[in-house]
Image (cartoon, rainbow, N blue to C red; front, side, top):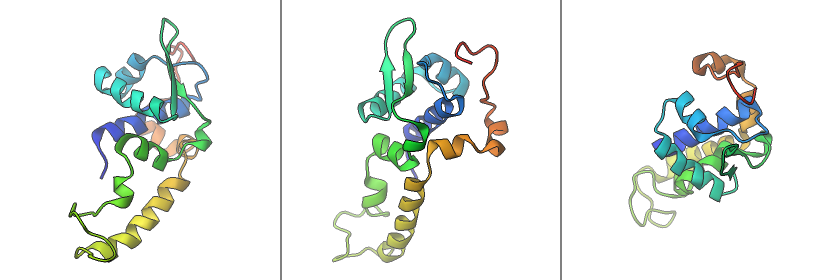
Length: 150
């Protein structure tokens, strides 16, 4: 549905939201915890920084932090920042020229689903997801004494 980079961006943003981190968190710490490539994650986080979702700081106390409160960042914000608006605008079959005037075979069906999907992702915030305790056990990302920002 969306790219691997987008998935990593969502996971990293959730990592920050769950910890409610005010301080900058080193990208290495995030990549190690998520088990993803440091270099790839760095590129994804640069995109989120460029789009105003994250803020970053270089240096020994540097890293990334949410640029806005977690309740002001939606899943749609993250997806559009990393992958662009195509998921919400382009033909689901990838056919050029598909639209209301020249619909593909799935166009009318997908338009309804896409609209609901778009609204749901826009209404779902990082804060809402971070407060849901059911999935935290799967990810095991609660702060520990080893975290330097806990």
